[in-house]
Length: 209
Image (cartoon, rainbow, N blue to C red):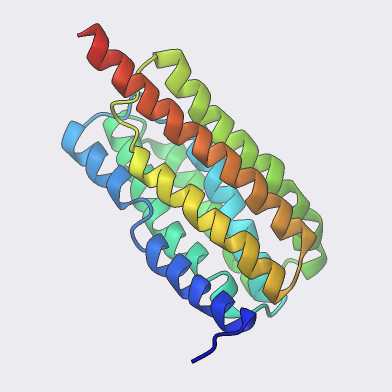
């Protein structure tokens, strides 16, 4: 049976979403196993969750196909668990983290219900690329500064690079939204950089031992 480009795009979307169900799982298990988050950038995670939240809201309020962005709600749930673990293991749970969480939830609901006008998301969406870039650069710098990547999961970043690659094609087929395409292309490069850096420093530390 012949499969056209649209059907192939739908299959890639399903594959991407399926992979995203386990995207952060290797990183979560790695943290639980080590009980340490020394090489994980909390600032990077907060920037990442900001980018995911804006992108999810942007796609939702614009009525884009659910298959083209369903991985974001899935990743967000894993991201919440990951941030919680990092806060616990880095001993940063306090009243400020609770207040920031409350403000985040309120703003997210206002975006989805369009209490905050849709135009705000239209202006915010172009910022997702620099926010996403900044989050990954922060994580990359954390690895390089520590010269250690024990708490960083290369598998998580491999899955990230892979799913971002498939999204370049599916977004092009679904909406050809240049804001989204630019974000995913840059993300492929940076996720790959973090993966290779974590592998390098793991190999480097094994040689040093």
